[in-house]
Image (cartoon, rainbow, N blue to C red; front, side):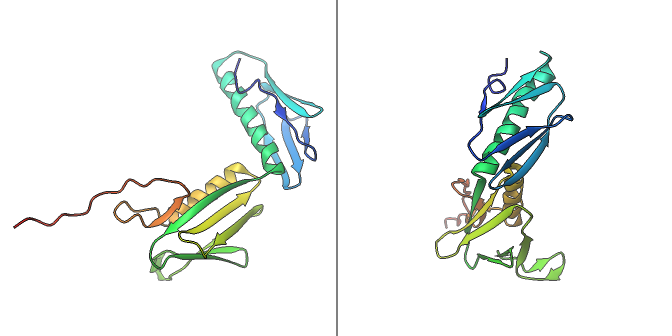
Length: 191
């Protein structure tokens, strides 16, 4: 049996888990509501204070779906009760960020965006996501928060992709704690 798939999921107080006839799991909590369709080969059992998942076959594909389905349901329970966050750091001279009208504004050294002169990048805030910027610290910290783990991670990757860290000086946007392999620059010739 799948070691991950057979572990029960603890449901904290204030979180409601429902499964409908189409095997769609809906989790409702203080931070919102999330839904996920689970493969029909996986049976979701909702009990008082916990959720368990069982599979109906020992085929290789169904075994792998067992652990995946359990992880998806667990992440939904954690997301609606505690939420997820990713922190990014901005390194570079003149680089800055701020939140304005629920949009994230970045000044990260772009002079042209899609061929048009523009110095700032605007990233709109999707539904269920919040941005926080700590400007008074070096490096500048951007925190992306939300209930949906996949959406938080994807948006953090999009922000990092606007100016990935470069290997010579290390300037750019990186995840908090990410180590950048630095390259040596050109060395002068000895005469």
